[in-house]
Amino acid sequence: MSKRRFVDWHTYYEEEAVERMPWFHRELDHDLAAALDELGIEGGDVLDLGAGPGTQAVALAKRGFRVTAADISAAAVRKAAELAGAEGVDVRFAVDDICGSSLCGPFDMVFDRGCFHVIAPDDRPVYVRTVRRLLRPRGLLFLKTFSTAETTVEGGPYRFTAEMIRDIFEGSLEVLSVRESSFRGTLDHEPLALFCILERPA
Figure (cartoon, rainbow, N blue to C red):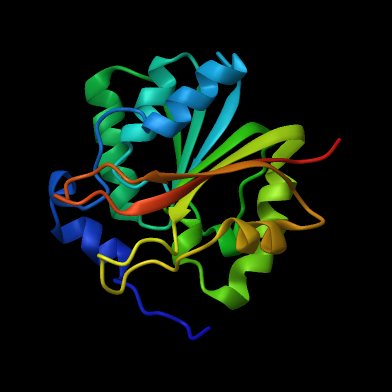
């Protein structure tokens, strides 16, 4: 699989209004909200990985979670921190690259709504090792990615099947569930997605 080129994230967040970004979504992701309710998870230490505009970190903080929000873009982190301040919630922010992370953890949960599917194939093993390191034993990764079923959006993120997710994380995280879903954002069309729940073994 050839390496895809993406925008310079810092420049993009510096120059673009976050409200116009395709993935901007004010509410907590509907799949994550449903999963938290179904699993009865009401608190804990959570890492919002690739936090971008900060809406998910803020929504999780409002639910009572202790949130660390990390993004590779300093501009994104600055804007997300401004949002958290305006909403009156306490979120710890960090400029961090998951493929060379300096985060320590451990976290009860990691939520990734769009970071993994822009990671180059050669860097995925680093991502997997780092997420495993950051999670506590029995900690959960909630992962949302583009699905191979998405054919309307040209270019953009890498696409995955459930079997690909299992192969990539095999031996590091156990895949508890994978289901078809979609990304809610600012586009007229909701890109088709996979919502995956994975667990670090004890």
